Amino acid sequence: MKPAFAVQELGQSIWLDNIRRGQLVTDEFRRLVEEDGVTGVTSNPTIFEKAITGSGDYDAGLRALVGEGTDALAIFDALAAEDLRQAADVLRPIYDRTEGRDGFVSVEVSPLLATDTEA
Image 1 (cartoon, rainbow, N blue to C red):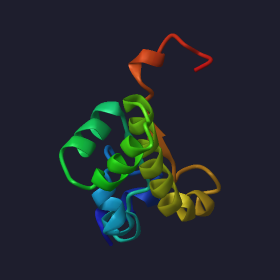
Image 2: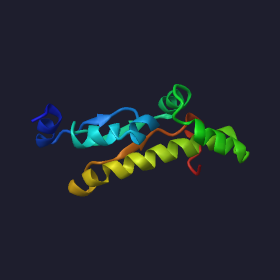
Image 3: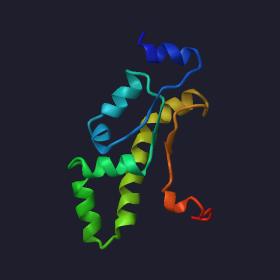
């Protein structure tokens, strides 16, 4: 048994602390969940910024959104939301199996929203 699965039996969760499009489109993230015992993922704006600027994985989405006249912040939000939705889809069986105790996707909101509860 892999160590990550062994610690799950002790009630501990293993979360990945980043997500990027390349992991999602190649099923690398699915493999981490199904074979290596990852039960959740968290990210933040800095991690997404590095993922977006550090690869060509987002180029098609960037071109489409820029072509629609979407502003930079909305582009960032749209690309990040797409990754988070895909990760949540992969983690859904974990969420169901644990009756909602695990299988989550977490993201830190932008510091620009820290004092804006409504936003």
